[in-house]
Amino acid sequence: MTPKLYMQRVSPPSRAVLMCAKSLDLELDLIEIDVLKMENVTPQFLQINPLHTIPFLDDNGFLLGDSHAIMIYLVEMYGKDRSLYPDDVKKRARINQMLHFDCGTFCKALKNCGKLKIGLYNANLARSERVPVPILLTDDKLIREENLNALIEAFGFLETFLQNSRYIAGDSLSIADLSLITTITNASALVPIDGHKYPRIRAWRKLMEFLPYSDINKSGGEEFKTLIKEMLSK
Ligand SMILES: N[C@@H](CCC(=O)N[C@@H](CS)C(=O)NCC(=O)O)C(=O)O
Image (tube, rainbow, N blue to C red; front, side):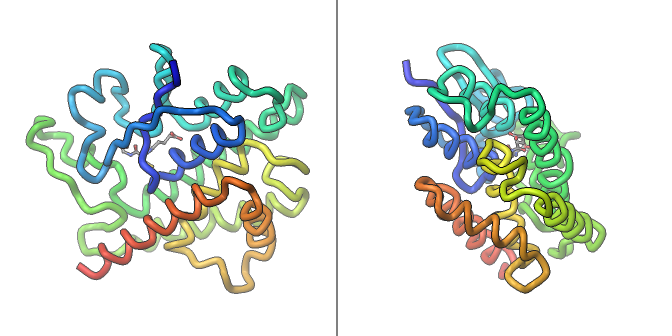
């Protein structure tokens, strides 16, 4: 049976998995989970994913969370070739480093800019009493300066990483590119990168726009920008 993916297009890691599947020519049965409506903390979803995060994969009963782990699994299980996550130990090590950078530094900085951890903020309440909180905005509707600075710092790290290679983890496309392009697409709604500060990031982003499945990222990123605008205008 077709593997199921719980996801939302506005979510960068969901889009990374969607792009990975597209590149592998793998069909997925997509199940929308609207985090804003707290569909990720329903008893049904929590039963399969106690971490209440999307994306989440159900491959015929094999349950797997975290976009980075999911992409590695999909390439290894379904990839006709391994180019997105090659067997070479050193190439893999570099890709792994950048996947951890995405997860532990970039995504974290983006999440910290606001209340993306919906459902956790009312952790002292029973689940049924928790209410959605606005994402990406602190109580006074401003992103805290130290959080924004951490995000800007992450952009700086990425610019430096790109000094030595065309793609994020070497000279060919890998799953690390799919992860980071989706993260920076959402993050660039908060940190504009179109000036002259990040020439390497912009050159790499251009490369990524040529991917035949780049629309997946573009449309989700636009949706995110609209969401932010709406929230800021309230
Ligand atoms: N490291 C995880 C992060 C997943 C994540 O935080 N997803 C967000 C949406 S972009 C989410 O599910 N937030 C809801 C929550 O944390 O409760 C991954 O790469 O899949």
